[in-house]
Length: 377
View (cartoon, rainbow, N blue to C red):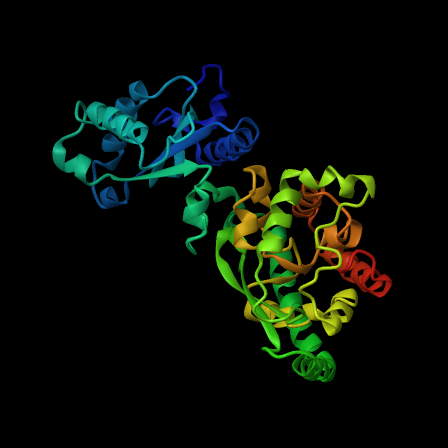
């Protein structure tokens, strides 16, 4: 560990960082990795099997003294969970240095080599070691496995202040009662729309699609069907790829000075579908997503898996701390006329500045944006 660190940040008994500071360094390291594209590995050493042993403190002292020589000055050693789990962050790893890589094996061997000098074999066997790498591989996240939450202890609700926790509780109540009231009041309208969709073209009333939600967990996203059935999504995939990578700022789109997240004049959309999209009425079934708990009334929009595959590391922050929402800051400030990076920055700004009052303002602004119909295609 770096020298000159304030003594209040160090556990004097064991000479390692305290839990709060270690987790803050973990948060900073994630941000650094997003900017630099350099990976990092974190090993967690779970000591819960020593809970009943009278010599637990002696074992921890031996362990920490043994591990310190196995890490570099730039690496971080501290309490991930005080008195139970010790964390080691190996910074500035090269790309590909994941938890199934030779680098992981080399680091683990180095740690165990030093432990063998201080602890007996039975004690070493009782240390539960887990490996965590950042950034996580996209293909793992898209297999319906959520983010590795051990990498985000600072984002868990239990770590927030009592006031913040209470605010999140109120937000959840707003979602439940707001969606329930909305379903009851709008049920005649939704029934009428369902009939129009069924009569307008063959196919199901609802459009169901897999989306990526909070912490990378996928769920079934609901909308009224606005397209003809059996339409392929190749057009949208190509559009999304160009939109995220910024290629839409070239050519005809740039000449028209119009950058949109939705495809304008999409040939796959039915005549009724165009009206529903213009009025944003196709979004109403998402009230059931909110009632079920997969979404919130206000939050970042949930990406499609093939959209998520195009994300840069920092883009992924938009689905970390908040459930996806029916509406959000980018819908009322940017709507569909914005670049992808601007959209992500608006979502991250919402997460950073979130309050119940902000949610209420966004809900009211959404009504006026929908009435104007700007940016809806």
